[in-house]
Image (cartoon, rainbow, N blue to C red; front, side):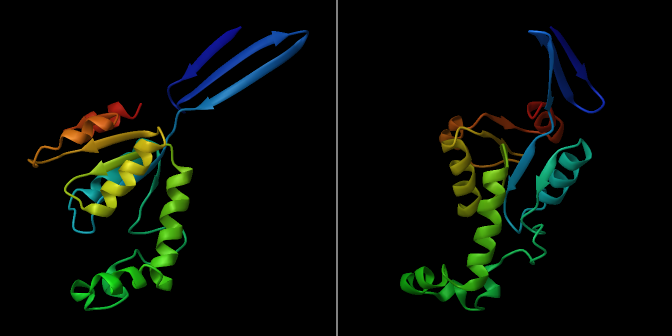
Length: 170
């Protein structure tokens, strides 16, 4: 049996002969990463760009592959902050909300890792929790001072720099 690792294309190749047949398996080390964060997060674009730069396939909720514009509640209604709980529940079924939910959940199912970029809100934390519950790798990236959170111990790790994040995704 032989095992080869190619650093340039991040692939493992395992080959062996069994009963006069040669078996070759190639394992791609590139990750499919879901970056969970907030529209207001100033670090988000850099994280997406850096992860793509090192060869990862990254889902960008601000620019989903469907071509839809990224979702904001203000696209459903300008007065969304004044909704009563019943209105909120009803608007979860709005066509724009349904479309973006489909985009996001499809991407989440396809990805094998999640990067939670702080600061962020409820949706991003819900997404990261979904990944953790599925046993997928979750890294919290905390580039600036934040209120401590004990339950991040559920995640695979906490990163304090972009270089540390990239290293922990290997």
